[in-house]
Length: 87
Image (tube, rainbow, N blue to C red; front, side):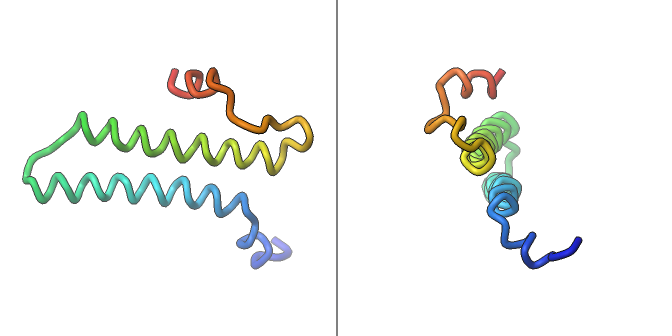
């Protein structure tokens, strides 16, 4: 661990942090709604958290492809990749 400050400034850490932090924030928001309504919403909670996590993960993966893919990285995520993610 030669340069921790440099490691903390790396874009890949920011993308991973956004993925985990975003998923956590989405889950907390849904939990707050459940508490406010005083009723559990298991199906809605699962769908919302899954959708948010999937969106953030595909965004992160596309960014990683740009960062580490070099000239071979695709400009956009091809539609079959979205289907493969959900499978």
